[in-house]
Image (cartoon, rainbow, N blue to C red; front, top):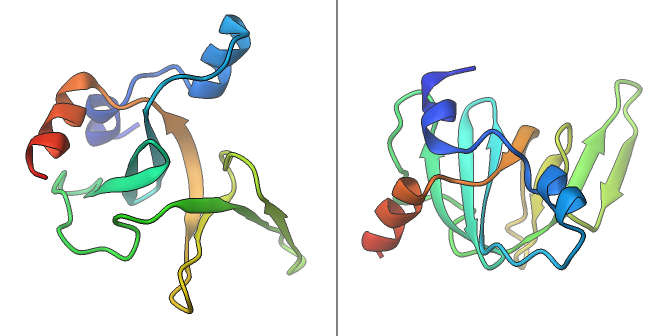
Length: 125
C-alpha cells in the first residue's frame, strides 16, 4: 500500500461500514482509488482528483464536477459488464457527459477520505 493511499483514506470501506450500520448511507464523501489516481466525491459529484504518485491535486481533469454513472467490469475474454449502481473494486468508473465519456482504470478500493483531505479540497474551491 502506498503512502499516499494510507494518508488519504480510512481503511474501512463504505460498503463494510453500511453492512454493520444497517441504515441509510448518509456520508457525503467518498474516494475511489485506482492504481494511479484518487477520485474524491462529495454528494455524488467529483470534487477533486489526486495523483497518487505525487500526492498533487489535479486542477483540470475530465472527472471534475461530474457525476459517476456506474462501474464497468472488463473481462479477459473481451466481455464487459455494466453496473449502474455503486462502483466496486475491480470495476472502472464510468462518467457520461454528452460525448465526452470517461472510463478510468479499475478501482482497487473505495474508501472514506480523511477529514484533513476533505478540508483541503473544500478550502480550494
